[in-house]
Image 1 (tube, rainbow, N blue to C red):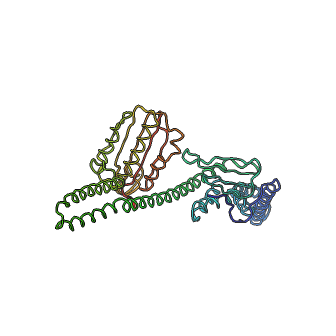
Image 2: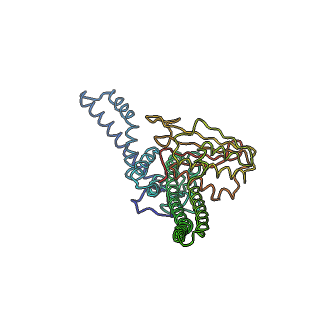
Image 3: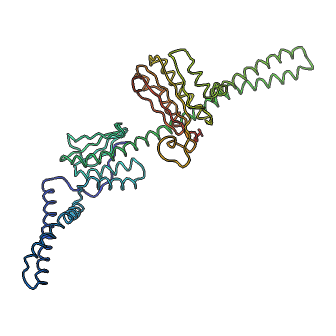
Length: 418
């Protein structure tokens, strides 16, 4: 997301001492007029009805003015705030922000609109919302803007910069919470777009590889096989003794073709999955040399679509490869579980499955030293995340409580690779 400035909006009230004084003069001047009018009107009405001065009339009028003072003041404050385009109630600002964002076409456009609303609510000279990948700004920031971190479920997703008079802490906190949710949505949208682009690129590269292997490898082998058979047929009558050598050549070429086909098939689906299934394949990965790997299965892994099996196998394979090469771990635990969705939905437990068919949950946790920097920026971790994303799921990689690294993949069972 590039640095953008939203379209011009109606000017908001600028923070200044004169502005604050004008706000107070309008509110309390109107309040004095209303209160005086109520008091005078009630006193006059009581006197007119009683035919003279009534000492109780003044007390009744004063009590009435006291009872109506707060609601009248709040209504007048809201009216003046609308007139001067300011807002003091943080929850009304948050509600206005939420309603406006619901009308946005996408999170990026919503963030641009939010920058305008936040500047108006804070009465700031300028506001900027920095999110991973870009910045959205409205107005002009000073040299030392106020910085507020945007945190979504404990994870920093950006920051809010504002310049001008010190804003209300309550208002700033409410706005920061809403902006953090929006910034998280912007990041997810950008990550999803990049992931889809990479998936399409990877798929096209795989198709090109298959086309090249078929054209350059298997194709010429089959063509040569057909020519050899034709030659043997022609020599069968003229030189029968030479046919044996041609048949031996045909047999060798057929063996080469079988190997080429097997290589192509193995590239599409690991042979371990075909012969052992997902359960046996995970156990075979654990038997490789290196630190001890335990496999814990919470029930049978049945009903898993083939595409999900391949994704889970490749994720576990890459994760265990990283453990053996970099983690310096002594033990690793591989856990796999098929979680079925509960009919009727709901929250919590199995009802949280990503699809109606449930999901496969896979985790690989080690007690090593953690991820080296070269691994964090490597192709392997990106490959695991992309395999999960291609299935419509997720793959998180982070520190394990107590030390080490944990890879957690959630793969919906109702989604297969197109």
